[in-house]
Length: 82
Image 1 (cartoon, helix red, strand yellow):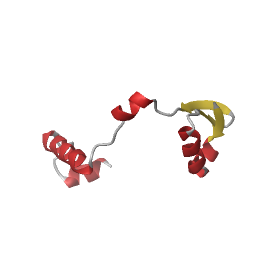
Image 2 (cartoon, rainbow, N blue to C red; image 1 turned 90 degrees about the vertical axis):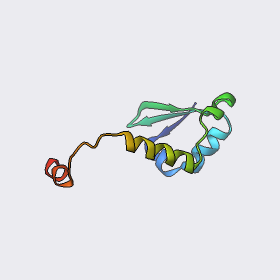
Image 3 (cartoon, helix red, strand yellow; image 1 turned 120 degrees about the horizontal axis):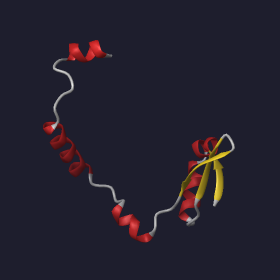
Image 4 (cartoon, rainbow, N blue to C red; image 1 turned 30 degrees about the vertical axis):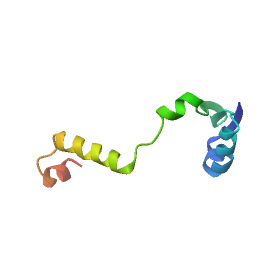
């Protein structure tokens, strides 16, 4: 497992991608302490993690919004709460 600081993760995206493509995991550290692991997807996981087409995702979002109850009755109420 390759160690990498949060700062390096921010500044070295290309290196992260290359490491994952090689099948290596990354141990993410923050201020010298282990924080999390970034691991490459296994062959079977790639299908489950596929991204939906934009049109399908947006249709689902709109359907959920139509079913959701607004938190505030008006914009004035929302503004007063903030």
